[in-house]
Image (cartoon, rainbow, N blue to C red; front, top):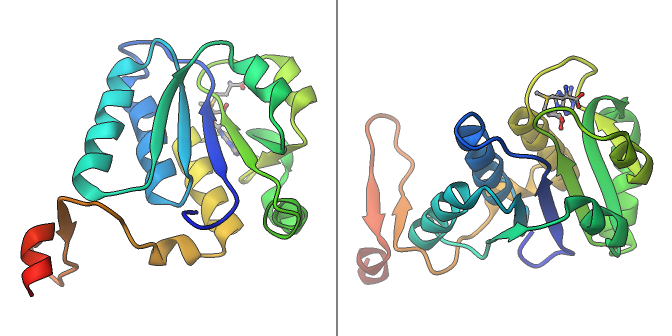
Length: 185
Ligand SMILES: C[S@@+](CC[C@H](N)C(=O)[O-])C[C@H]1O[C@@H](n2cnc3c(N)ncnc32)[C@H](O)[C@@H]1O
């Protein structure tokens, strides 16, 4: 999270058209739930634009980047690598170990989520293969639950910098204020 050791999310694989919405949601969920950066495959430019636009409007800091050779990024990552997969160890059994490496020892964390079939190398190169349940579901759901576990809910209290607008929580309806009008309140 903003003042903590870095958490980057790597989206492995992207099928233009079919995966556009899911890849965008990986980025938006990473941003909303406390990651610092999302790395998208180089054919996911449309998703990058959407995430950058949301960050401009609703605040940051958050970075979205296009990358080539995701497996090189995993191999050369200076820190811990967590791969989210339904075949992995149960998140509730190993979250303390991951938190100890990331929060206590200050290791940057790379969080890898797949789309279609994930190459076996990724399972071998990850420090932890982690299942959020051992049932098949979605990269967005796995990412959300994992980040909330990692940050123990602190991400829900984040402050957003350089936002153009801010949502005011309301019991019913929608209330959005511009950052300028906030400043005048
Ligand atoms: C729709 S799944 C496809 C997985 C693919 N069939 C494979 O063999 O790797 C896409 C991604 O969702 C995530 N995912 C799905 N279920 C998960 C679970 N139970 N725990 C953690 N991540 C999960 C994983 O990152 C996975 O790569």
